[in-house]
Length: 344
Image 1 (cartoon, one colour):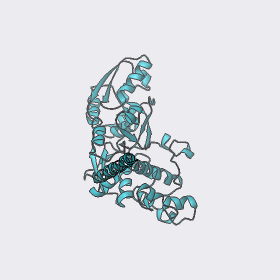
Image 2 (cartoon, rainbow, N blue to C red; image 1 turned 60 degrees about the vertical axis):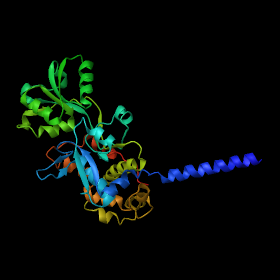
Image 3 (tube, rainbow, N blue to C red; image 1 turned 180 degrees about the vertical axis):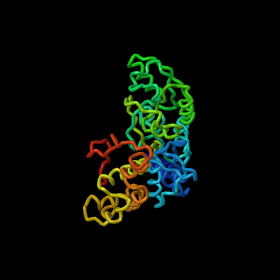
């Protein structure tokens, strides 16, 4: 019995020692706390894609992807300017996120199985439903991608575009020559200089890059969309709280449009007695605190960026130079795919 008691005492001491040792180890403070300690959010964006993430001549960033990061900063700090934008190439974007150089990647990046698993990353939602297409000079009098047999095609490396082109041309028994470049600017310049017949990328990017050409109206985007390219913000594996914050920030913008909450009426809507709006605005329950934010987190977001529809129209839609139709990016109850789980 004495031996058993001694063994139990020694085991208890061992457990206490292990617990004390674990208490002494520095704990991972998490992405949210690191951002608060730093005083700003680090957001990975493109190197300049109009409508999605691009700086003006004064260095002020704007775009649909930029608004996601400004919304996050507003939710955390009640200040959408507390963001450091880090321009990244397609090749370097995921490495920057994996290494911790940035907190979130909001840079027209396609959600695929391999990226979601093998890279140690998590896509938090879909901010833009896109697909790959082709741009060509109108002077070539080509009206369909099926007429591109033996064409030379400019493409950017480090994207899903190369594989999609291969699949499409092989699937349609057509020949092609692929000419790859390291950056979007190099790709567009090569196309404009005549090094290739066709420029391929996501359709949204084709519209954006066309604005950079000397004579945009001399070029047309062909009607075929050859792939699914769901774009959205990305975070690292291993921090569920930060994953939830990024995901629900995007969902808040989408839900706000569904409930007709806008930058102009957000203060008035926050006074509503409707149960669903009381939950959204934090006057009923503690949903904001469950995320690690404040009760008024949605109000902060909408005041900063407006709802999803406002951001879309301002940056890429009817109110922008791109003038891209909402299409699949309409709300689910308007014939589109944008759908956010309820805030409750």
